Length: 301
Image 1: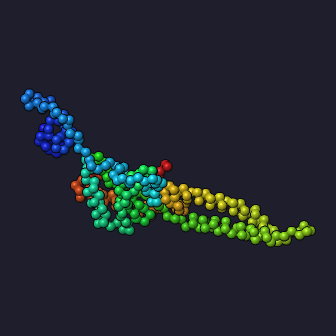
Image 2: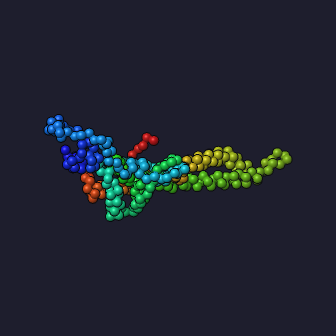
């Protein structure tokens, strides 16, 4: 018998190959009939060797972050809202994960994506005792693409995720400044108008009574609503800081057509870089088919 995994001509009498630990297929009936009695394998006195173990740890525990007492932010906190997330699993190529990462890093330098920065970082998950994973973060403008290459058992796992941080709206900034100025100067104007009102002994009223009534009846409710809106904005901003590390989230607007074009171009560039790197390490590109869609898509939650 020949081992189908490593090609050893004498893999041994057990269930596993003595050279590589691969589990051998059961012999066919024709092969069993060809064995003469004196050539029948003798049961080994010791248990068969365990299957070949993989030194790399599985996804989720590739790199240990140590004992982290608390991490309130997710791994991509501060990079915006998640868009597209695609992944590929390539069979029996896990041993090439580290080589592929090195080739991908070199390919990014050669591709020189306009206006983009490529940074290898370790992102830490949200939780108490957490782990970390090595990512390539490719940032261009308001878009960040995260690329994760890891060994998953004997297979190769490639994941690509896109995050977009919307631009600050000029209109929202103007409304915020107007609300702040209004709640700041309204009490001053009201106190000034009230101080000019005087009541005589004969029942007469001196001063700008109409102005005081206007400040009280017309602008008074707006003053209350402005404080209420600012309070809601403050609570929302604190919530976004605690969850996404983005205290200015309320001032951001969704992406427009230009932003979507830039994001799609970045996604295609990152994916094509990985496909070229697969060729360089001897893995066929067809094992990593192109993603079905690019850019943003609606999310239910």
